[in-house]
Structure formats: C-alpha cells, structure tokens
Image (tube, rainbow, N blue to C red; front, side):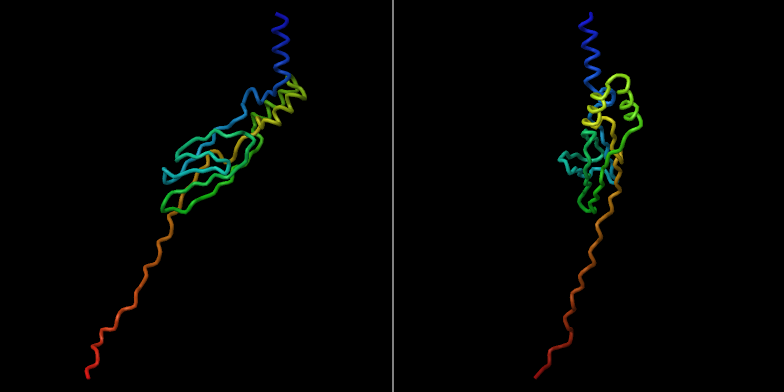
Length: 144
C-alpha cells in the first residue's frame, strides 16, 4: 500500500497539472466559405474544410486555405495562455512543484491556439477583362 501511495505522489510530482488535465495537443477547427477548400499548415498537416486538426499546444504556424477560382488566404495561428491552463499551472504549487511547472512550460499544456476556430471567407478571383481584337478594315480593295 505504501509503495502505491509513493508511486502516485511521485507521478504527480514528476508531471505538471495542466499537462495531466489539458494534455499536450489541441484540436484546431478550420471552416471556410465556400466549404470544400484545401487546408495546408506550415507544419505539414492538411485537410478539406470543414475539418479539425490535432496540433501540439506549443506550436505556432500558418494555415493556408485555397480553392480553385478563389484567392488563397493565409491565417497566422498563435498561442496564448488559456484561462484553465493557468489554473492547471497554478495547481503545481500544491502537487507538481517546480518539476510540474517545468513540465507544463515545456509541453505547452497551459497554452491554447488563437484563432480557434480558423474561419475564412474566400474571395473569388477577379475575372480577367475581355481581350478586344482589332477589327479588320472592311474597305474594299482598290481596283486598278
């Protein structure tokens, strides 16, 4: 019994509270108007809207949304400290201590992505102006 208790206490001390309660990944939703657009992140993952990508909480990247006939849009996705991430980080004072705080900071468990969801309204590509060809002269050919 004492071994189990020591193992549990050691496990709590070696991991951060936010890492335990929030995890190290985040679900990023991407929506576009019109839907069915290709999504590519600067980190590599791709999908077709509407979609959800699982990304590391500490990563910042760019989302590119494109569709034939529309102008591609780039959206920077940043991180910020989440309200409940800060609470989990503060829980380290009781359980995780310095090691737990270090774990949470290293894994990014206290962070969330903004914007989330990423919402993009694609604009149609401009229609090229029609090419006007010069008319041939309709004058009759001179007779000799």
